[in-house]
Length: 82
Ligand SMILES: [Zn+2]
Image 1 (cartoon, rainbow, N blue to C red):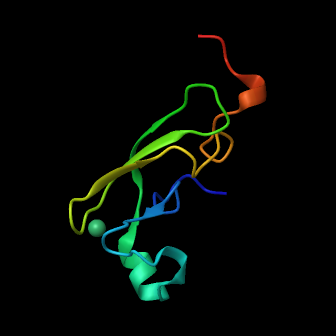
Image 2 (image 1 turned 90 degrees about the vertical axis):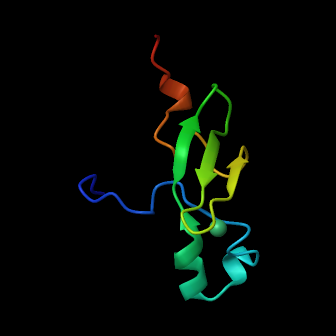
Image 3 (image 1 turned 180 degrees about the vertical axis):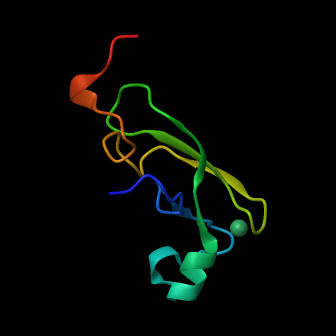
């Protein structure tokens, strides 16, 4: 696992406007609509809230049930005291 190359691999989602088919679209459409979150918020539950804005069409949306805290790099079992 490398952190040197920032890519669309980090908690991506498909723009629902550019790619309404999601996983069922062909690979070219999937790659073109893949979007990284503009912000990731975790309030201590199982899932994080990701906000997205599509580079292609400007559509904004949020997902609160797509990525769990561990995938986002938070560790629910070892939460640091602030
Ligand atoms: Zn879009």
